Image (cartoon, rainbow, N blue to C red; front, side):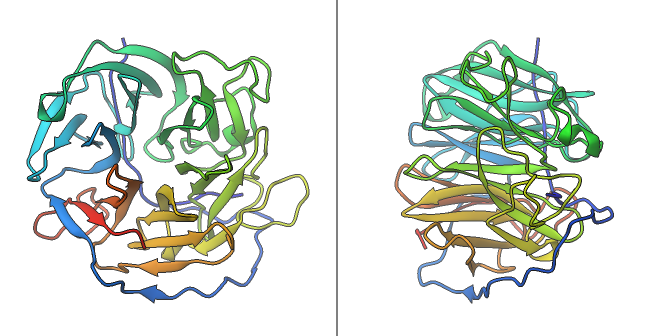
Length: 354
């Protein structure tokens, strides 16, 4: 599967990256999709974000990571932004910097670039709302390959209580098939950074491999795990992730029909996608698309189909999550040098479940 577009203390961003298409690509017809304009569109909750990358909630308070500034911004009920922390040690070029964040059991977890490597650390959380503060960093994992592109960066907790992290190949495609490398993988850690005893490869953080640049992770109510992945020049992907699975990069891009690799559930031309953050609600999976500038809805009962919303209305979309109030929270990503910023960009949006 070829994937597209493209002390510890912290870093990161993403978009699309170019390159030549790999062998094994197919011309599988795409299922029909249709732009949809639902009534009651998004509400702008906050403006003035600088290259936002990830949304997490501390109680009812949205926290947003900014790739280039290394800030964690808290958003209050009136849309005011408060920088509750600036993570020191973040050093990344291109798509590197402060990337994914997650909140669980009194800690904020962060994935960031620190020079030649990406790292994962956690920080004790105190306070609430704009008064939220971070304690001293606790390093969990280092040595994840970093580069000017393909850094992965998504963090998410699964229903098993484990921390999952997506990593990119950092521009060296051979890493994805190398089980001794942390690049081009989905990793699985205990919350305190150990290798879970039931991981598919003994003594290894690797959960799945053969990935180019995964940027979205989510689980359905039945425990099934899904991931969005950037292809190279031909197909972007939505994958069903299985422990120990090989997803084909750099040998194939999209559906290969090769029993050695797991084919995606659905694929899209790269110009229409660059799928980043994903979320699941009500039996549907939602994908924030960068280059495609749209929110895509995939029914899990028919994962080879999709509908499109807000096409080119808000520019590049980096992340989507389900908020405590049940609505979809979406961040735009137009200030990263690849978009065309409008007044107020970048923004946090609140949209109804579609």
